[in-house]
Structure formats: structure tokens, C-alpha cells
Length: 230
Image (cartoon, rainbow, N blue to C red; front, side, top):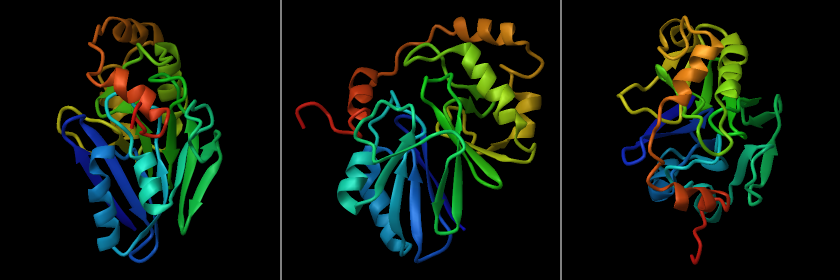
């Protein structure tokens, strides 16, 4: 399998490129608009054909590349069923599968960071978006976020996956690139050894500033990256 983990330093966003092998169909998860040219060049260099561009949720800290990639490559744009982005071509509900040339992604509804967040599960890895991060969890204080739903998504859904399942998150701010379900169960400081009430108290006390681009990014991303007036 071809697997690439790409990084936007400005927003600390990871984008993932997957394909079964060279010369075959490919998909991108959580692509950033500013890197559209790089994605297209890499896909051409690897002899791939982009068929899907997927967002785990409506991002608030960067502009998505879903629209620009669709314009450049003709790919199908994908989000979860509860996304309010009407421009998306395909919306997956829980347990629906995106089947692409030997790669299968199962949609798992994991709200909490936002009310429409989805994770996507393969046989050996899960792409968790922002709901479960490396030794952390996504904030729950805007876009319909809810710490109770975050706890439920992590503890009662993601933590029911195999302990050796690899975790690939949409963001990291400390230098992590991968983790596992078993590691996060044992070492995630917001969850390990905590009750739901303790977790909710932690999340409600974070008092984080809004993402710098939120007022621009959210409306743009609901239009698959198209900004007002452009």
C-alpha cells in the first residue's frame, strides 16, 4: 500500500494519501487548500489517479482542498452524513464503507469535537480527525462540540477497536505522528484513569482562544473551500 503522511506547519494539520499501489486509484484525507499543487504533483509522480478527497469534519483552522482538488482532478468529495456542507458529492453514514481499488474505509460517527465529526477505519488503522489526538483530544467548545459526546465517541467507540490499531489524527502540536488505541487507553492524560465527569471538567476548563482563521475557514469549508467573493 502507498501511504503518505503530509503536514501543514501553519495549522498543524496532517493530510493522508492512500492508494493500494502505484498506478492505481488514490484518496486524500483532510487536505489543505494551500497544498493543492503539491498534492496534484505527488499524485502524478506516483502515477496515481485521485478519485476521492475526504474531510473528517468541518475544519476551523484551515481552508479545505476538497473543492480545489475536485476542480483540478475531477475527484469525488466526501464527508459524513451529518455535514452541512451541501457542496459535498458523497456523504457517508455510520458503518457505510468507501471502497476504492482494494482499500476500504468504514465510517464511524464520532461527534464531540464537532457535531458531525467522523472517523474512518481500515483493517489496521483509524483516521480520527480531531476527536482523538495523540495524548490529547480535540476541543469541544464550538461547532456543536460536546465533551459528553467526545467521551462517548472515544471511550465507547474508538476504544472498542483493537489495541494495536494505529491512530492517525488530523492534527498534532507536539511532534507526534502516530499512536495506537492501546497507548491512548493507557497514557492519554485526559482520559486514562478518568471518569466521564472528570473528563468533562477538564474540557470545560480549557479556555482556548478561537482558531485564527475560524471566521474565514468555517464558512469557506461549508462551501468545500470556496471563499466569499472568490
